[in-house]
Image 1 (cartoon, rainbow, N blue to C red):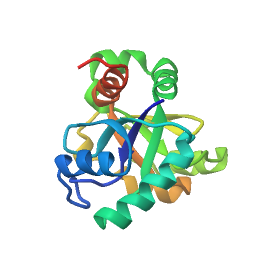
Image 2 (image 1 turned 180 degrees about the vertical axis):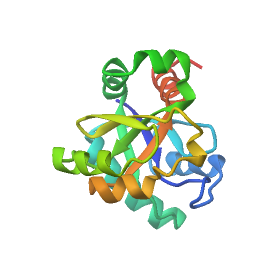
Image 3 (image 1 turned 180 degrees about the horizontal axis):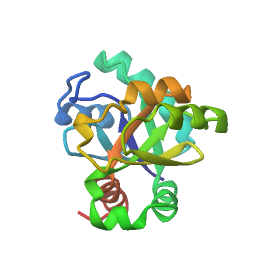
Image 4 (image 1 turned 45 degrees about the horizontal axis):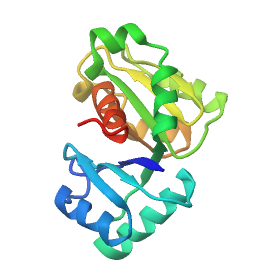
Length: 180
């Protein structure tokens, strides 16, 4: 089974770790074909016998134990990421401005009440759609200048999240499916 892991707060406002170290770590803990994409904690690897949620717990524990790295892992299979891409409610944004369309991977599903609370605190032009434990966020203006931060999103939703832009999500799936 091929897994795609998205680490939270790696090399961007969080823990610093070299991608070469993560590739070696994947090999050390028995994962096959370990690859990374970019410098922000995107991992592709193969393993057997664990669900994506079990893999999240395993990776988190091993990263803390072997690397001293305390972070969250959000793991999806290639099939799950294909479904996330297929369910994108903002196809025009994906074409017109893919770097401002983010997929936020959440640690679990949220409630409609939490989603309503989040919508109520949005002060800018941002908007989102929830699909299970995955969110599609559109930041029509500069993401770095947005007041809708990860901390606000997590506080309102009551779950941990990490996000990747549409370009990265598509590249991760291509790598997971064996394309370079």
